Length: 149
Image (cartoon, rainbow, N blue to C red; front, side, top):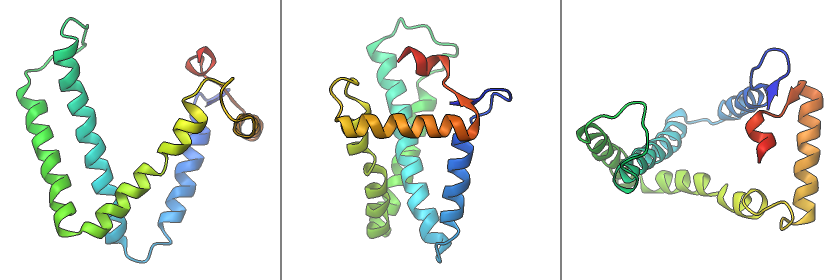
């Protein structure tokens, strides 16, 4: 959703603001950095690995920029290092970071992934109420991509 006049993602900005305030309540900032950096580099490595996979799976797909595979492979090796070292040296905090990242998977598979006709009625009603409330309070509209889904 974007603001109707300014074309800015107001709900996303507000969510980031609230999450930043929550992060300020953590006493040990280095623990928070460990949670975030582990998850960040893990998903960054997965996205680059996905690009390497698509390079072999769909070689004729148009790409705006096509580099040699050396750089993505090198980047993936670096992300493996940046994920493996904290997992080895600070296992508990790394597992907490994994748990935080995985906590969104059930919400996605039960409420977002299935077509609207197969979603639980409670979840469909909750999502529509949240959408209407957000649109009303933030003066937002759905984007063209949101409408087509």
